Length: 111
Length: 115
Image (cartoon, rainbow over all chains, first blue to last red):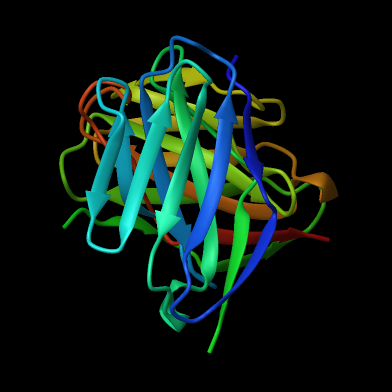
């Protein structure tokens, strides 16, 4: 099956700075890579996703980049705000209708 | 917006009890999923269903079963709860197959404690 590694496990940034979370995957057939944000006491919420036919996608302060050759993808958050503090999960599609998730990354934005 | 509703936010059960976790989605989605979330382990797939009465094992199905009698409802069953099944359980749904052009939407989760 697919193996998704996510790092760093915890990331602290000053408000206004950028945050970058990186993930690697093992299955070269994976073609869909979503990112989820989970706030305390809530379920994961999809914030952005990318498919293997593009290298970058942007939505306001959030962007995702994909390097298929190296099998890694990254989430970039610019101009971080306190409400960006949460756990972020990356995932990669594999097999029949499945997503493999990374272990999560705690982002703390310091005001 | 898609709404995935899990019937209980917190649940406390005793070892050996039969436990039902219920999930309902309101967007006529074909696929429904059950994950468990544990600290340091991320989300792991227990079972999923791609149609009524159809189911497929995920990565950690042992000790669990599922039921999908109606399209909008997907139940996770712990036949005989054990302490190692204490976890956050997340239900999710998608309109079509992931990896095509579809997205996965989660409920708020059920924190199950087995004593």
